[in-house]
Image (cartoon, rainbow, N blue to C red):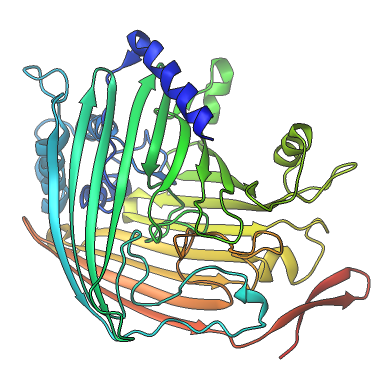
Length: 476
């Protein structure tokens, strides 16, 4: 992994003359995304793939140019005050004018914050001997969805800063964080120092190359999707992605926009199999301005004590993915996801569904296997710019997480990173209904949210099922 990172970095430097001057990403929790969502819901921005974030600062500039190009001069008063204000706010931050043809190329402090929290929220119990105990993480309904922040069941204080860096065609970011935790269990004064983000980025032709620690979310949910969400810190990874959606040549252009990405991440040492890797690939399509869909594959493999395999077996494992092939060996934990989003500009509404399931050697013939107990489902809706002046946004979601969706027999720490689930924060064997209402003024935003979560106490095992072979059965 380290050798590959070094070679890729050297290759990127040698290709620097062919590279465009890149810009850092806008963090996925930035309020700019809420303004962008208003433009997308209104149908003013269509040249984007919404299922994979973050976007770069240059991408935001493109979105803003597209939105302004769809508003005819003199018709601004036909749009809501909220939408016009969103255009103004994004314009102040991201437009590159004639007098400044390129972004500022010197280090710049993008922001600093101090966060104080107090909570009485015990961690969700995982009883010994249960199958879902194969999860090396802490689940907490109030303290999760924190983008990897360490929050105590008690009092917490953390300070962080975000600094953008430039070096020739490269752009990057460093974001250190210091936290002090005082938990109710008596662990007072415990400190935690970490780098939230630390990456370098280059754009060479149509391809973006990222090296370092960064956060990527996939899906349309309020916290990301079942595969990669806002719950954990960023991954230490190499990522290749199309810098912008593309249209296929010739008559294939009628198929709309396409975008692909792939990453290889190190899952760290603090787990049962240290040094394991996570390979994630995503292919997205937007055939028209109303519909977008994507497919995701995840492959957790390697590390100290993991099943041994040859390079050929590894490649076969990636290529054939969920399906068995001749002389196959079970050397990895695999998961696959699908997502769909439908945009209704006339109603300023988006409907979406995300799904993720683990590998199923029975080709999904098990009634309760790949489609339910091994799966995570998220169904939601979002309506933007409602009411007088378009001040209100509403969203609602239903989620289901099966007993085995985050875990695996070989990689016993599960899909976690530094004790946090990398996908949806609900955790295994649970369901939820949640929603929120936001009011946005000219300079302020007030948000209300509500969550109902149910954690099942059932224990599951794999038992024989007539005509199927083996499937999940409830034990207790």
